[in-house]
Image 1 (cartoon, helix red, strand yellow):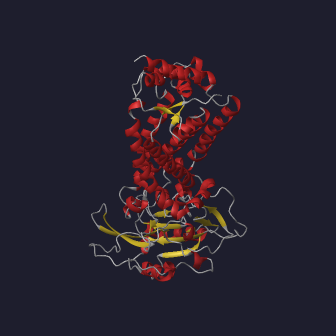
Image 2 (cartoon, rainbow over the protein chains, first blue to last red; image 1 turned 30 degrees about the horizontal axis):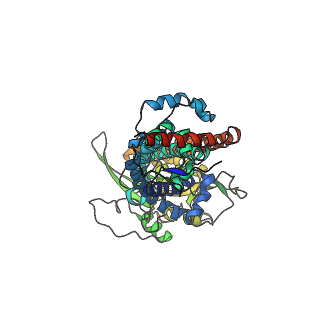
Image 3 (cartoon, rainbow over the protein chains, first blue to last red; image 1 turned 90 degrees about the vertical axis):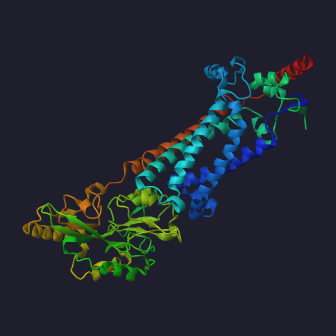
Length: 219
Length: 303
């Protein structure tokens, strides 16, 4: 295949750094959280230097994740606002999962699936944060009553499981739609990628709506 | 407590395997606390501190005989003093020795995420194996009696061990040894129930017709039992739960949700994997690149 000479900047360096800080926090929280959730996964605690270290680190990583995710919300909320293309995209789900993109209506910068991942995490991460604060034994163990803490633990577990499943979908989609990972590592996509997956966004780019400097010579 | 016996476990926290239990030919033990014979002298509190080498920080007088005010990482048993005005308008001073109840079905053990940090021996004693404790506080949420306390110094959870070290060598717990009135008795659970029955009959004959044994079946019975003069209202005794049970919230969290969550996450991952090996990746074609380049060029050239 001929290598395209032009590329399109999809994620800026700030976007990418912010994303990967969030990602690292999320993976660490998933490992330590699952270790404290299911006995069969308690061996993950060894990755953190033992159970005590893991228990101590988990909430601090959680704070970092919240701050980092707030950064992502600020950068990405606008492009994830729902629009009329979303329903049409969802209706064509059976073509989406079979890679039959000819039958999928053109979408802008993000499709409905990507927006769903964004808004799910925007809901779940604050839920995890606030329920997590109530269970933070070291500082907040005496702040609330035990029945409140029990409910917090339950909500925290359920929200975490939901977030992990959303994350699995997010990671798989990034691998499945080839060259998406490169958008988040090196920052760029090819015009063909944009044409295939985000045609309206490509048209917007072509008409100069997003400025000239997002379209560059291949690095 | 330290891990004295490791071959007579009947329960072990965060373990899906059968715990080592070859040496389980033990009689179930129980401590019987006869509240009606307690004079509130706190010898049991002192004996507990003495045997277990516990020295809580000296606190302040809070206007009550109850001192310290609450159980703590270094306060494993506490005389709780309650003043109760009965139907006849007479004052009753209800003094209850509080501490771990050693439930047959321990909520702390069910909630604990650390392997083997909480165990139950064949004799029924529930023990914290402290070096394995991670300090998460889940036992606090699991306990129906509000017993475990987490140390701010070493971030470990502590509670009464029922002197598992003494019991394992045939001695009675320190509090039992120290009690001057025989209000605290120790022996096999069967013997203790039998003895309690005699005491209850005696109390009834003295007019306490609601006297009875506190051995709550909602947690499978306990290995610390009370003889209460008002067994119909345990909460009179400084909030002893009327119907203690492992919270349904904890049961859901540590029961059905655990396997369902792993299955859910596993299925999501497997769905992705099998989508990948059947439908396969969604790759950009050469035609897409041509179209993409053309789309960019066309619009750029027509401002």
